[in-house]
Image (cartoon, rainbow, N blue to C red; front, top):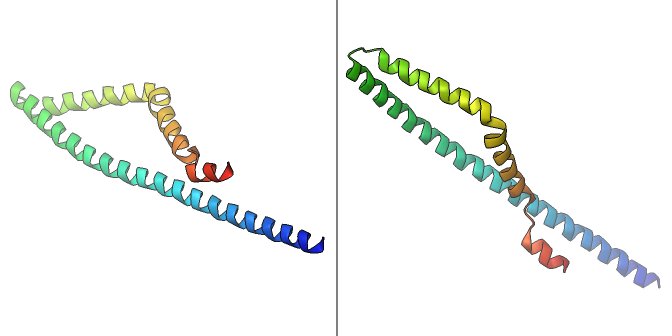
Length: 120
């Protein structure tokens, strides 16, 4: 009886250690996926900003040249970005924040298939 209790205690201790290791690996995997998504998103954001910057200069210079006034093109481009900024501010909660939050929750709360297979 004493040996059986000792074996049971050892098996329980081993089980807890294995579950702890699985939890650590799962957290590390999900954190690394989230970090990778943030890095890729950051790189795409920087590239997109450069594209937007150069297209904005092109549009401003083209409008200025078309109108014969060197300031009008930059004024129109600035007003366009002001309108876009106001539009984004008005729709930010439903169209921007919620999808980002949902995507992060989906990444972080996605069930680990290896862990689920071991439970059955």
